Length: 249
Image (cartoon, rainbow, N blue to C red):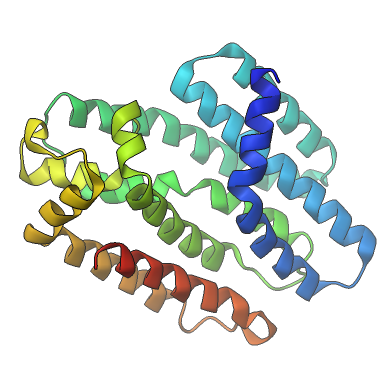
């Protein structure tokens, strides 16, 4: 299996549950099998665009950039001009993430101080690709707009993944929010690489309470959203926030 096929398989496994959640929104919105099939095609394609361009940003491997651009071309050929224009605006925001992510992470690895505002901005931009997927779902959900709930869900999901994958991220020197927060309080050479020990450090420094407060506010932000037949979405948001809490028990 070559590296592109290997990455495609990895993306499929990584995004399986996420795609199912997005498709649940589509299935609740339309009974038209053709629309459902097209929505799944577009969402799968969009996920491949985002991940391959992210791989390129991390490795500067031109083959990943080529693959990402290939899927982007396929995506834009299969949406209306108005949808394409709005998706391109979101795309520019996502591309800015890659540069910002490198900038912030370099500061952390260099032992320079970073502010809460910088971490919050990084966290917001880290999940910006979900705005892209949310805009695609809007093509099929008529007047119902799920962009914000999807974005909130993804922001919480991303930090849960950062906690779960703390050790592998640190080992591979990949951006990690928990590591960033710890670097604000203690020298990086004193940050522990073991996840359980790092969590103990975070709890001692009350970093867990800071993150819980941010997540609580995000859940509150969508509490007034009219979910109606889409209650499963707010339930998934709450479940993911509880999953975060369990990481710190």
